[in-house]
Amino acid sequence: MEASDSKSASKHVFSKVFFDYHQFLEVAEIIHNYPMEYELSVLGRTSKLFPAQGKDSIGNGKTVQNHIQELTAIGSKFNSYFNPEIVHIFIIGPLSSIFLNDLEGKSLGALSMGPYGILRGLGISRKMANAHLSALKKGGYLLIVRGFEDQLEDLKNLLELGRFNRIALH
Image (cartoon, rainbow, N blue to C red; front, side):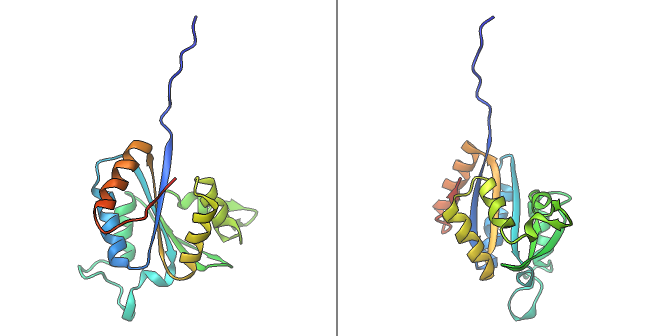
């Protein structure tokens, strides 16, 4: 019996940081409506769930938190944890379980180097992982999409046609 090679489709990740929540939500909507198999997760400082001037809605009566939950996955729950490097962080989406995985009484994301290790484990380069964590500290939203390479490449091209450039594909 001869052996045969078969390529298995592995998932890849792309990530992008946004400081403008309207732009972030616009891109999340595009991803949500794009016809592909994907997992969308979002991280940010909990203080960013309530946009400027103390308002907690995005103009259509939905809170930022509720809107992100709708875009990430059915049944996605809002979770948060404290990280000594970044302060209070929220996570919404399928990657929540990784960041909240209990390690001797603490969530993995709550460990000083936890978020960095998780991002590296997802395939994000050292440079990008450090840049993402720095952006989170400054109040950015980190959008992470896991999907198949060809679909992510198509999505990346679609987003680059608009004003959403410099998306990191890993």
